Amino acid sequence: MIGYSIIVNFNQNLPQIDLPPDMIHLGIGQPSSYLLPINEMEKAAAHSLSKESRFFLAYGEASGNSTFRETLAQFLSSQYPNKVDPGQLLITNGNSQALDFICTLFARPGDTVLVEEPSYFLALKIFADHKLNLVSIPVDDNGLIISALEEKLETLEPSFLYTIPTYHNPASVTLTSKRRQDLVRICAQKDLLVVADEVYHFLNYSDEPPSPVGTWNNQCPLISLGSFSKILAPGLRLGWMHTRSDLVEKIVQSGLLVSGGGLNPFTSEIVNSFIFLGFLAPHIQRLKTVYRKRIDIFCNQLKESLPDQIEFKIPKGGYFVWLKFPEDIDTNSFRKKAQKQHVDFYPGMLFSHKKELKNYMRLSFAFYDQPVLIEGAHRFGKVISSYLS
Image 1 (cartoon, helix red, strand yellow):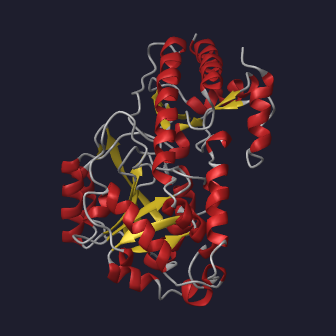
Image 2 (cartoon, rainbow, N blue to C red):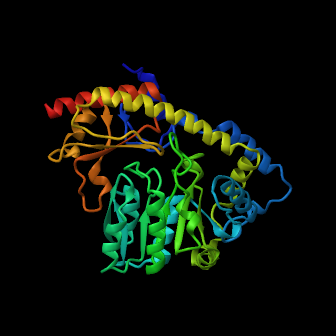
Image 3 (cartoon, rainbow, N blue to C red):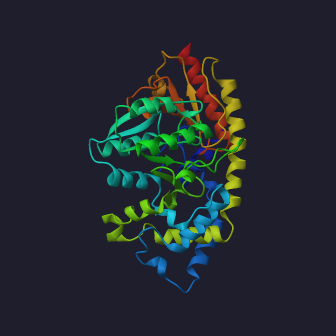
């Protein structure tokens, strides 16, 4: 049995998560508090504040501070097969703000937007807030099904397509290189904007993912979204859009940026120093080492604890394990029973705008360390076995 104090400490360190002291919530998709690099961040902040220039305390450039965009472009160029130009980058307050911004600029209430089935449940909430008409495209083990997309585009003229191509949230699948090329070709023909949520691209554990969809941004209307929430710290509220320079120029003419200037200039400068001082790449490697070990432990315990009729694949990257139950099982129906046993999860219906996928659920290994994951899987297995019997 896990020590009570371990879970208490996690909850106290992250007050945003309001959990009972002995609750293990396997749905939480954010880093453990001890993985947040406070010492390196302190050095980066000191480096930034030691400079004579105070430009980062002003409103800032509409597309983001040029020094940060140059540093970020250099980092991305070192990771991507193609060179990233600073003029292709626009700094955001993270993916949620970026998605909300895209909805404001590229869609109107009632417009049709294509999403995957399943899809990131909080993105679905943002789209609902903008009163968009969502139409889903199914996903299989190789990502978005391109033939299904083509079929929808025969009759629809959507404002944009939202896709999570690499280490999908929640399904953990990755769009193959061939399908990426087909996606770009089709969307170029249809002049359809692709919004590619690529926040998990750097978190690969057992394979090398295909090139980011963003690297094709000169071949079709495309905005690739990146974020430091998953590779550095979510409290920074910092991310980026990677797109064609002409689209950047269009976006910076928006009232929000004309009025308020660039987004997050102060935090951008600290992260600029974090990258400049050489902290980011080693930190990502540390995350990958920790998460790789957690996957092995967690998935092995799930295999031992769960009945055979429950299916899942070991994720090769990202944060999540996507479980499939028999067709007649609604995972939401035993969630309260699980909570009484001090374990929780996110049911599959959250990830469907049609409230389908009821026989699925999402678990995450990002928030808890190995002993907690083992105990969580053990508790979870007891609940499921009892329910199915």
